[in-house]
Structure formats: C-alpha cells, structure tokens
Length: 109
Image (cartoon, rainbow, N blue to C red; front, side, top):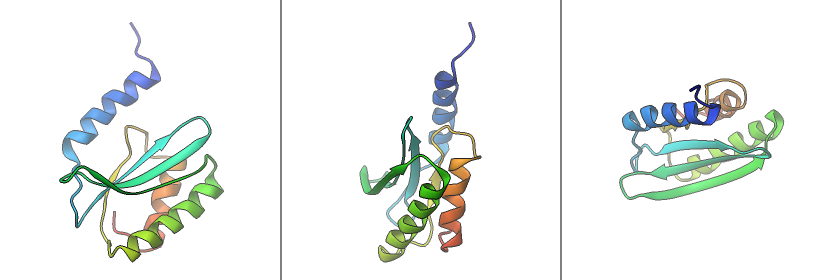
C-alpha cells in the first residue's frame, strides 16, 4: 500500500528528531505549516520548554517578515546560534524563505 504524504512526512520527522536536540545555549528552531498559517518556535529540549513562538499567514512575504522579527527576538534573548528542525518538510519554498530570513539577520543555523 502506498504511503500518504503525511505518513512520509512523519517518517522523515522521526529520523530528523533522532539527531536534533536543542539546548539553552543553542535552542531548536522548529516550523509547522497548516492550510492557512505558518508557525515557528524556539524550544529548549533539555528542560522541555518552548521559549518563543510566532505565527503568520502562509505566504512568502509574510514569512520573510516573520523570520526577520523572530531573529530580532532571538538577538534580544542573546541567542546567536540555533539548530533548525524542518519538522519533516522538504527544504524548499516557504521553509527555505524562513531560514534565509534568519540567516540574513545573523542567526547561525
């Protein structure tokens, strides 16, 4: 039986999360896409806490603005480095726009 797109993403997600772990000094930046919105957050996996989260509409212009705002908030928290968790999504399109926005503001991913 052929696997659905969601099942394929869940499989990729599990393989990614085995290797990625966020700390207080180098948190995990994660993303999620719904049908209407794009969510991003920053988590400390050692203490199991989401440090920051942000939401916007699911289009490239809004995501680029959101990534710049998110990077500013990370700088305020004195976080220069982070680990990126693409959450099973392929690294292209909206995911790539988000990460490039973070990198343009000096966040080392």
